Image 1 (cartoon, rainbow, N blue to C red):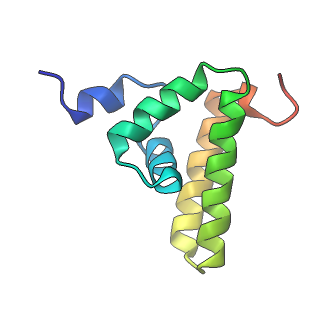
Image 2 (cartoon, helix red, strand yellow; image 1 turned 45 degrees about the vertical axis):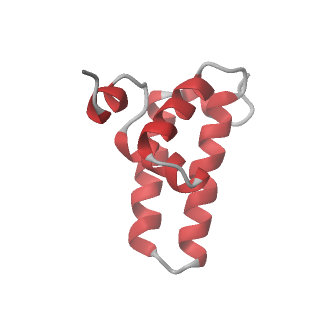
Length: 91
């Protein structure tokens, strides 16, 4: 039987990136993983994932949650390293 860990491991996204999508979209991690994986295969989808993470960083900074902002920045940095096609202006 496939469990949550299996589903999260099947995506091209890290746990932190999935959690950022989940927080941004107000959904559970499995739904976020499915959404993220879908977006990564769309034209301009990687840019949408990048935008979600950037908006989460802005929200964390607005709430003065520096620990969360730093964690999200690390997730963004790793995302862009793994998915350079997500850089704005590409594609």
